[in-house]
Length: 235
Image 1 (tube, rainbow, N blue to C red):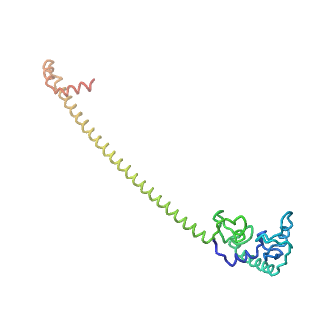
Image 2 (image 1 turned 180 degrees about the vertical axis):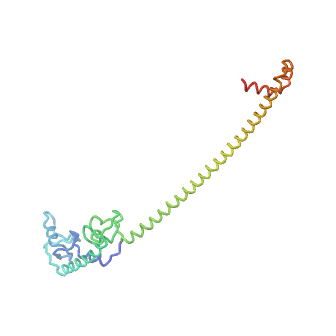
Image 3 (image 1 turned 30 degrees about the vertical axis):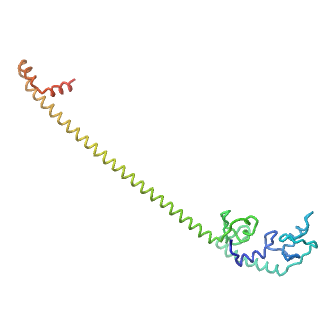
């Protein structure tokens, strides 16, 4: 519950419980409750309705009321006070469009700033209403908590991405090393085969100019693997 402030008490005392606006020609009935003269008269003139107080339901068979001039004077003072506060609030752009009262309260249900007159209306009667400064502090704390959560999630994501980057770079390096090793191995193997091929070609060239019988005889003495390699390459 919002603690009753002097401004709000003044607003309550100068507001008609029927129309929820400032009293206009206020009158007092038998039970000592006050109403606008026009509204209490209209209320009692409804057909088939017993005359009673709209607030406490005490019967008023005589339908009597008396002008409350003292309350009317207080209403005029309240209006002047309201005008001064409104001008100050207008300079800050924080005035209720409906009642031209400063927006001092925050309705939790509607998530909106309201004035003290709005708070007394039927629209907000059952709503949770708190001072706007308190609402600001609560929202600020909630925003800070959410910001911390987002930053924590961001940091976790950043760490995860860094780990993934390191993993990819490690795999890339390992793959590069493996490719380099296989390349060197193949080059070494190919170099040996080329060298062996060169030796075989030289040997064959040396024997090529010899007589046929001698060539065939010495050919049998050649390394079988070399001959097989030469035959395979030439096929």
